[in-house]
Length: 275
Image (cartoon, rainbow, N blue to C red; front, top):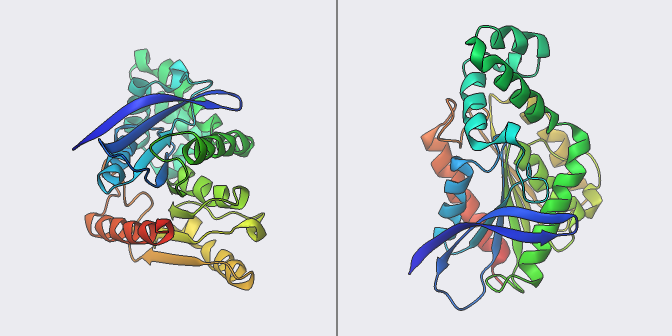
């Protein structure tokens, strides 16, 4: 048997969904689904690698491209331009990423032929982080989950879970508030939901960096609310770890914490998908 990984088109309520799907083949019985939810960088090589890691563990892993409109990624967010944008952003202080004036000053230090490309890519990219986009992202995730549960032969009738990172981490938790059939959500350094916590029916596992204060400061209140409402939530905070500690293409990668977090994730997923 071998790993089969490819981009496929999934039919959604608002058009086609572009998704990277991986599974061990040939296998005759249906398997649980893991929705792997992208970081701000999109379904890049790192997310594709994670999809394949979960597939190798016996799941069918699916990463829908949240930045594609009806299956087509905008030119401003092409693979090549995203690689360039990521390299640029990692060359400047993180505090400058979300400050338009600081970001523009840094862009003007780049070669003139790269400036406009960087500017348009970053404007489009950060526009994707506007809270108004969350609704369309959740719709894509719900459509993909419905496809996995009801239509995809490899996964039909089996539980659907999600594992998300940063932007995707927040969406992994939010998906649990809007899909009462969801089997479990894993949140890697994503903001917790503020609304509809009553709707969460599945266990949630959160994995955070101790130095990622913008997010970890929000966890105690969410943990208390989950406990108050009788929900299942476990938070693991790694001391001295930074945001994106699991991303091995990121300067903040921590191999020890990433290894532990992956083991915890597999244990959690096995528990919530075993019927």
